[in-house]
Image (cartoon, rainbow, N blue to C red; front, side, top):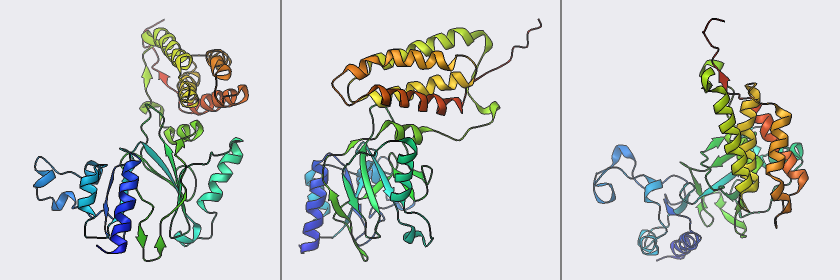
Length: 308
C-alpha cells in the first residue's frame, strides 16, 4: 500500500471514529466512486434494491479498511447520517465572478443580525474556500441549499455530502484548520434555512373557520409548553421554532403579536436563569426574529360561506 492510500485510509478511520459515516470518492476527484442507480447490478449490498452512497456510508472500521486497502480513494462524509450541517463558503474566484467571498457574505449576515458565529470544526478547500461543520439541533431536519442564505454560501445536510479533510485534488488538498468538536448550528441559521419563499394565499395551510379558536388555543399552548420544557442546549432552536410558528398565526390575524411576544418571553424565562449562555437580550432577539419570519408566511383561514 502506498503512502497516499495509507494516509487516506487513516483519515477515513479517524472520521468514522467521530461518528461520521464515510464512503469512497474517486481518486483525485469529488464524485462518489460507487455505482449509480442506472448502472446498479442488483447484487451485493444492492440485492434488495439500489443502495446509494448515503445508504452505504459506514463507520465500520473493517469495511473502511477493506475499501481503502489498495486504492487512494478520496473521502466523502454523508452529512445527514452524521447529523451534520456544513456551511460551504466558496470564493468568488472559484465561480469566475468579481463578488464577495462566502466568508464575506456570511460575516455580513452576522453583522446584520448582531451576532457572532461560534468557532467550530473547520476545513479549508483547495480553491481557498472553507467548510464549517455544525451539528443539527435535535428534531430538526435540514436539506441542502445553494445560495439561499447568501451569495457563495451552500449548505450540506440530509441528502448531501462533503469532501472530507485529507482528500486530494490536482489543485491541492482539503486540510483540517480547526479540530474542535462541531458546535450546534445557531438558532438564527436554523431559522433562515427553514424559511421558504412566501407562497400564494391559496397554497398556504388553511384553518377552517369552525376550528379557528380551538386551533389557535391549542397551537399557542403547545408552542409555549415546548418552550417551557426546552432542555439546556436546545433553548435557542426550540424558542426560534415556537416564535416562527406563532408568527404565522400573527400574520393570519389569529393572535396579537405583542401578546405572543409576552407569552413567549414568560415561557422562556427559565432559559435566562439556567446554567447556560442564554441572556434576556438574546431571548428577546430570537423571539422577535422568529415572529417576524413567521408573519411573512401566515396561515390563513377560509372565509365562512354561511349567510349572516
